[in-house]
Length: 121
Length: 288
Image (cartoon, each protein chain N blue to C red):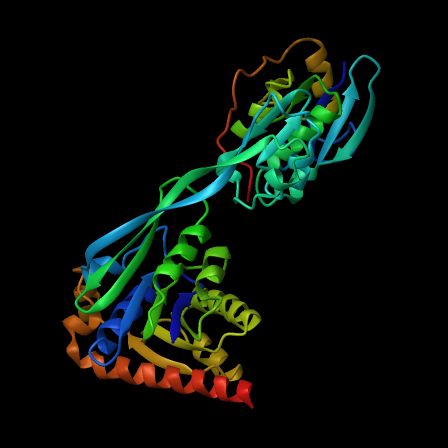
């Protein structure tokens, strides 16, 4: 089961980016094996609807959960019906965060935790 | 003749100049004032128009018939504003992000997308002491001013002098307001902020190829940066309005400058003559 993590860089040694729609990269990782790839976030270039573009990309990658700092309503409205679990308030080193996730330390969000345009500018 | 009154920086006197220019010219010309600052129209405070008509502003947004949709995703791919999302067996629209271009419905191979009106604002018109008055009002919470501004411009299309009061800044709503003007007045103030935003506004009007001149408001305060810049760039400074407690007092009561201090009228008439001279020069050189 793959998970998507918003990332400040391209490796597991980087930190979780606080923004969903406008994070620079996503790390797509298989927590059991720690095999991972990074993808550039298409949403970062968007004039508007960054979260929607990013969410469609994450859905397309087959991730089943998202770990991030904040997730706005538009992105959540794509991720949720796609059956992707969203975990917000996640911060720190990505490798550590994956360990925390495996041990079930995060609680799934039932809704967006910030308003639209929260992470812009 | 269309004169737009714009500024990079907000609060530099666009409304003060627009309303006083209109009031100073109305006895000798047919004057229309178009308040294009649709997020916060305020010319009405100073002109107190009798509103005689209005019409809604709608944009066309997509509605997807899910039973016809094959979830091919073409609509989502073509949308420049990410206003439509397709994943698995889901298609979602985000009407607030839609600019109403119609590409999604045009390209849908299944003809599953129709369009419906979404109300985003209103255009009102009327008479203000002999001035034809038009203003647009964007509904609070809506993000897209240009469709409302376009409709204001369509309504304010008289033969005489049309004065368009632009929103502040240099983004899409400003470009939409000033793009087909014969002249653009740029308001600024003699401060580093005024100068910074003036240079952005100058770049914008140059890109659009519109003749322009500067009005400096609240002179006597701040520094010489704006004057030096205009001199260096050979930009005409057409009027200077001093920092004056009496002007502020009148204005704060909702009284137009030329109504409260009639001595200013001749200066606004002169301002119009200077504008006309520059705009005509441009027209002549284009003809040649």
